[in-house]
Length: 589
Image (cartoon, rainbow, N blue to C red; front, top):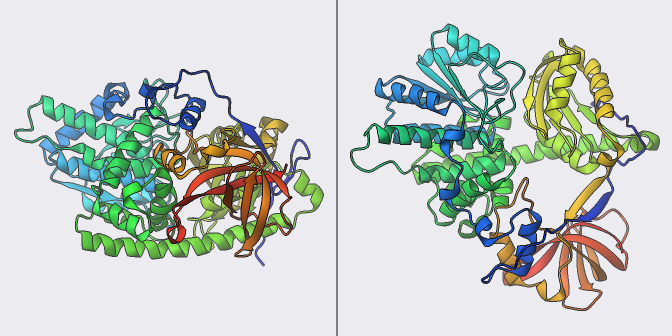
């Protein structure tokens, strides 16, 4: 049996291998009623997210933040414009996640639309090259004889790779959105809204968003030079890719990102998406005409990501660059099959992780504050998904490790955090305290990646334990499920469910509406051994309501009266055209 190393220490006994949730209602700021037909419930939901007027709710591309605010963008444009004019070989260096894949597709398509005649791409292989622009990847790219490398969604932490590329006489343009370390690599130009001192108002751009902004700035430059004798290239055709990458990377959906995603969703709903994306939507069984950000996050993105996790992300990028619908469909089928393998592997690894947690003595489980998991048989491409699942279950910062390659002396780790603990900053502090411990790391507040030698695993375990304990307060260990309050009996309608579905994009930082009420349980039954199907009624009257609680069966029946947090969903199963409650959490009333 594989051994999982479990790190389980905490500042207070607060268990809970399965975290206890508290339902907390969002405060709703004072706001004037909006004119028109906008639902009062939607107005309340928007107001709780800082949208206090109909004007603020509009998501027009004309309201995008200006290009000039992005630091070094003029220097990057000059570099690209010269490369286009002189027909230099531009190689886009992608990344092996969905943000990197869509960003690469935006770069290749955008540059070709803007006149580049010599554009290629290369993406690192997770197993052989590691993350980003590494010296090993530079060695492989040499055969392509590039003049200019342009990184997408990576590069800010790739010091050795940038140095290796510069030593060969290549120019390097880094585009990234990850947080930089103390020093930045010696690239010719770096475009990253998260560089210290950068004046761009939004720090939430995904890698694909940074690249889209760069393409917009390049088009403006070429326009001012009089390069477009006839029709100007329509870069809005790339917004479907921008939407997919932005949602997939789970960056905060601030106003700027919501405008980008909304515009991309409009194109997809109109059937104007790239052939590869349309084929993936079909394989995912989603309705193109009413596609949502959730459909991207749970249907499209996993199929693109699967290529980078288990195979080669070049497969995913190839699908996004394909203009032939038949060929795109074939590639989407391959990605769908790889995603099926990923699901099976992920479930197996999650089952092993949960079994290890369940074997913890009760006192250790009660003391859990940080989880560190390692299994020498795990696949490094799936550890991020395992960390995310365990973090959600335990409401604890979670690290999952696997060998970088079979029998490798290097471990690759993925971390997921909880609100209040900046996980990349935590890794930076460990790195400062123990300079020889972590080989490399990078990421965001809520997610990060790292690599270290297997012999250093125990030292890392001890170091991260001490640090997290010093940073976490007991309050942060109490999971909270935020609600938009109760719905009235007359609100449980298909009309409201449709309004809420299309009122997004919802996502990170702009969460989908969740409501809570007290219900009487009229009947219930177990579905598929893990789920509960319920018929509920409001205690104050109203219609009987169908509800489902996925993963809700814990071996005992629900109480006669429950307090449930739920989402109002459309129910079109077998032509019903009704509504049902998707229960997120329930407890005794």
